[in-house]
Amino acid sequence: DTFTTPVAAPYIPYPIGVRSYAQRWHNIRFLARVIREHRINVVVAHSRAASWVANIACWITRTPFVSTVHGKQHLHFSSTAVSIYGRHIIAISENLRQHLMNDLGISPSHVAMIPNGLVVEQWNKPKRLPHETGPSRRSLFNVDGRTRVLLLVGRLSGPKGDVAKFLMTQVLPRLRRHIRVSLAIVGGMKMNEDIPPAIESIRASHGTSSVLLLGFQKDIKPYLFHADVVIAAGRSAVESAVAGRPTVALGETNYHGLLTPENLEEAMCTEFGDQGALSMPSADRVADDLSAILKKPNASAVRSVSMKMRERYDMRAIVPRVHRVYTNAIVETLSPASIPVLMYHRVVPKEPTEWKHGIWVTREQFRTQLASLRRRGFQSVTFHDYAKFMKGEFSLPKKPVMLTFDDGYEDNYTEAYPLMEEFGMKGIIYLVADRRRTNFWVPEEPNTPLMSKTQIREMAVNGHEFGSHTISHLRLPEADGRTAEREIRESKNRCEALAGKEVVSFAYPFGACSEEAKRLVRDAGYQFAVAADTGPLKFYDDFFEIRRAQVFPWTNAFGFWKKTQPWYIRYKARKHSGK
Image (cartoon, rainbow, N blue to C red):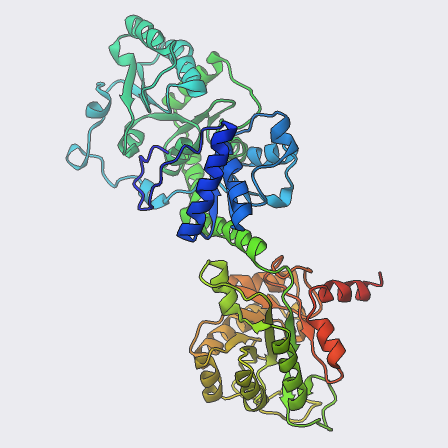
């Protein structure tokens, strides 16, 4: 990294890029020590050499590992035989994602396509561009008012240098036959050997102002806004298009011409010309395109592209996607794949004779079950705990278990709460948030009170979690969308008011779940949702359809033991499927 952008993170220099095998093993030992000493939660590698070292160091230290891939990888035996990028990979373009899957054989489930993001507000066009508010066009480019300016953003070395030479020696002379135009280049001044003589030749033929070398600029925005057309690829093309400038995508491998709504998706797939299959244009085609843009800019297309790019590359949308990759790395590395999530409803003093549904256990049954959990080394966790774990702020116990209670019956407070406190356990109670505070949704059962606000608040203060179970115990897949959305959102607000704490989890009434219900729950701001007998077999594969094991009045000691085993969910799923 050149550190051209200030960063507050500590910098520890070490020759990670030196690829001799002796140095690699030194690098691995060094990185493992840094991980342990600094208690690193996630390691992110940004190059093949860094991934090679980090993958092994993270395996040694059992640390979550993420790779980001910014360019195509050289294909040889070692790159295809063994993946050094791990299971959590970010590719910055769709073409790169396809390259990793098709050429390197990496599983699609391991690769997320997430483009580099921008703080889009920083690329808003200034309200005015008079001399007194910033640099003038003349001061930036040293040209008169009649000269049109093409701005090339990119370095002059490697393949980028070849693109610059192509523009200088083949495209620019064609343009200057009928348009007074200069090519200004912003970027590092380290050049390929053939570029200085090319510049000298062009200037000798067309004047010193025909090619302008402006060097690296910390603030490129004035140059973008004063140029007539910007030629760029990669991140520079993104910045120009987001800024609302006419942007021609020309990179190391592809040419897309002026970015328009029609070619934008294709251009994004190749990272605006840097990552596609090699297909370069003729000089005549590029010159004709630039001439047409200079004569008649397509302002509506440029505005439309800017709007689409702002939506796609807005950092506020990108950061959560990156965080999800980090979170997935954490949970798949450090979380058990199976966490028993036990499902209760009522805990009663003695067996009720008038209840038709077996959604209760007696106080003594519950005591026996808590004793069994403690004897076998289980420790309870809540979804608040798990959310902190996902951010690296909480360590899961060796044998976590979740105790969930649906509906929020008053006996959760009078019977279950004292026993959980006695055994050092914390519960997760899903409240039906209707203000009637009774079980009105089951008219065939005796009228039974739900917990009061005072009772809820006391348990919440003592570390028990409260989640939402809708307002009216609504069967979501059968409800219309507006009603379902209102119940999901409003119940969250009501439960937070009752508990005095943020509600992060939701329980689907009747365990009835659908993809649309999951979307509504996610959009309402919940982080987790529990179902009943549906959902993936791994706890962390879908946080909005987490399977639970229901405890019934007839669940005996052996049955309860089974429900807490790592294999139980898989066993039950196979049993129900008949296999």
